[in-house]
Length: 88
Image (cartoon, rainbow, N blue to C red; front, side, top):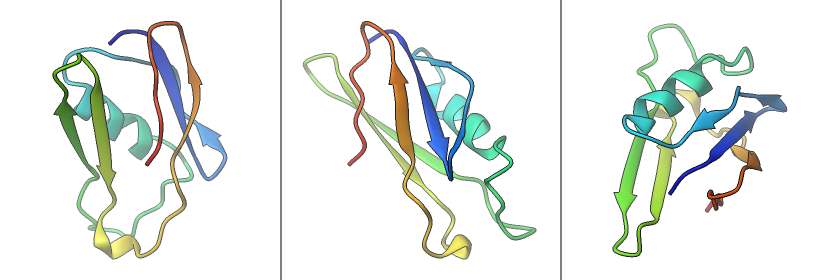
């Protein structure tokens, strides 16, 4: 898996994110850095889970803290050559 992508939350988009090592930490930092991400004070960080598949692909699950209640869906807004991304 290679390439870059962007994620938007509440219509604000992250900078380009490059697939690579420690992607989980990069996703947390990128999403929590958006001004539209406004959890209550003292709320734990997002959690990102990565699952590698035998075909070389990956799935990432982003878990918002329960203190945020219902949240809007993250949207993958751009993928460069080499990256195929989807939101489940």
